[in-house]
Length: 100
Image (cartoon, rainbow, N blue to C red; front, side, top):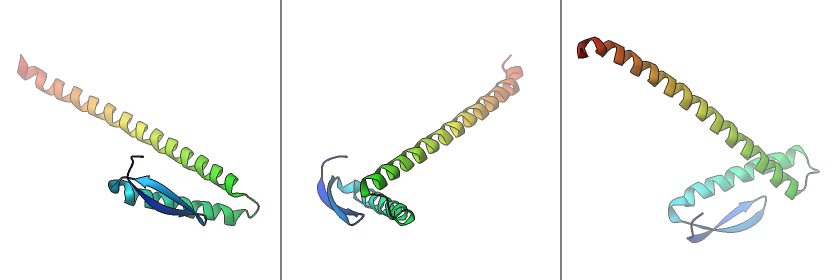
């Protein structure tokens, strides 16, 4: 994250100060709120988990979601590339007789 004005975020009642560029401030605050909500849900679901374990599980869940999203995006990109290639082939065939 780029250097900038430190901002305060609160996650599971713990305060953190993070340097953040002004244009990244809203995104960082939204991410901190989302992380706080998810960690609170995890803590409520299992009162015996410590903060370190909750943080590790939350990080693991987010990484899993990110990798799944990248995989879906890759599949969509591949399908789009195949469709564009098919359209291009049709166009080449359609215009081939007129080029002769």
